[in-house]
Length: 267
Image (tube, rainbow, N blue to C red; front, side):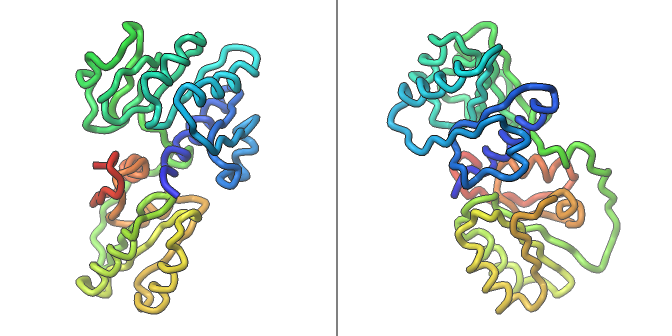
């Protein structure tokens, strides 16, 4: 129920690689999270439900990678990847890109990607263990879904009404959506309309829908798993949202944000 931003950016990256002629395989997430578009993006989807140890998981990933012919590169988007895991990969001779957010542990990857606006190359001095490793830092390396590559420039026009986007990721919002609505609806005028965007895997969706129907007086529109999210971003004037990967999509749309961290790695 957490970490859907990781899945979204891996899917977006795989889409781009696939368009460039690469063969892509997803290893890890359950098949229940696979979308129809994934059948076009991924040649195979291998679920991996258990994690017993770093070495065992690394060896399993190596076995998946070596089953394919040609030059294989691994993309690691999992904060459990510790140094023993990396040493196992290193011995296999495989090359890999590793997503990182903290620069707080040794990294043996060939490429390290941290798209945070706060990230700097200097943060990785003493962290990168290989002299030829390439560090990719800053929002210019954010991985966005294709629909955000050609959004029109935002125009800021004065209006009597204001549309507010409320979203806290694709999984469990941890109560943040209703916390936001219950706080703001009584304190704001009727000219302000709220658009709630929630993932289909959010276990609180029914509770949110019931509250909106009984309490919101038509001032809240609920969007669950919308097919295209960029138009919703572009139609809103400001967003109240989690500090995850969706922030880069909002930034691509020029949407001002108020951020509320609902996970430690968002702080």
